[in-house]
Amino acid sequence: MSDFFAMGGYAVYVWPSFLLALIILVANVVAPMQHRKRVIKDIARKLRRARKEQR
Image 1 (cartoon, rainbow, N blue to C red):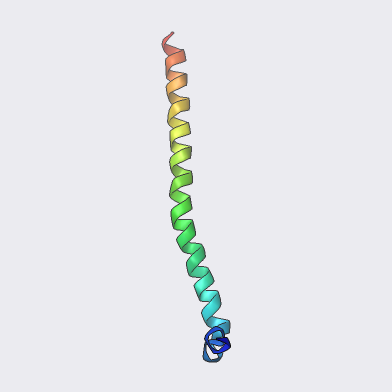
Image 2: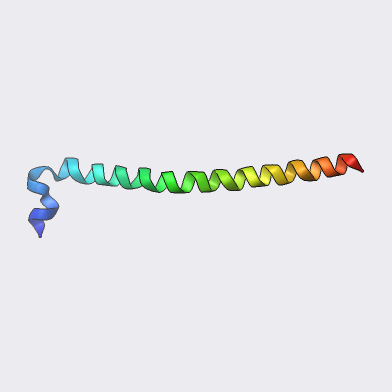
């Protein structure tokens, strides 16, 4: 098992690469979700402002 984690002496390169890939994958999921929420809030704010101007 320790041989697996040692990756034949290349663990210093392999594990940070896996970690970086995981961080990028998570960011690719989270960032669009946050952007969507921000856009929806912005649209709602613009609609409220437009409705107030119509009165």
